View 1 (cartoon, rainbow, N blue to C red):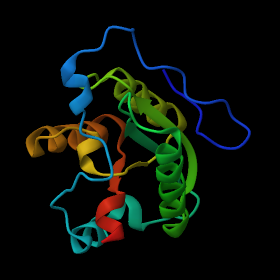
View 2 (view 1 turned 90 degrees about the horizontal axis):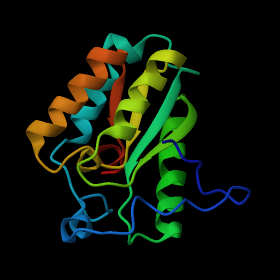
View 3 (view 1 turned 135 degrees about the vertical axis):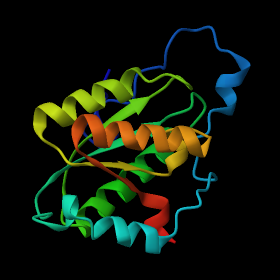
Length: 162
């Protein structure tokens, strides 16, 4: 499922998933307190790769976020604003957000890849790589999957803001 962003003229996000909540859902790693070990220099190296260095202006970008059940709408909105600004700074055209509400689920992630392929989008922006997974190996697998299936680059907002 894809959900609209929290702007002044859009409805609030729908309630996530079924009413039964597991304790592990409360520990979903997707807040601004999470960190990653990717340096700004590494992001700049990625920006110099041919995939995004040639004709970057106007290319489509999508956002992807894990949204825990207990996060406030305003925090999500602030993150959306930061991600859109990042896309603008890179000369990208930001299209839409994909929100994953269930920790460990890849349903929305798979839908995002399909959308990337259909629209020919070449970029996915995440607040941190921990929105993909907690473990670095899983993060790398998901990044590789986005690249392999959609020929798209994953851009980490937290590495850019350092």
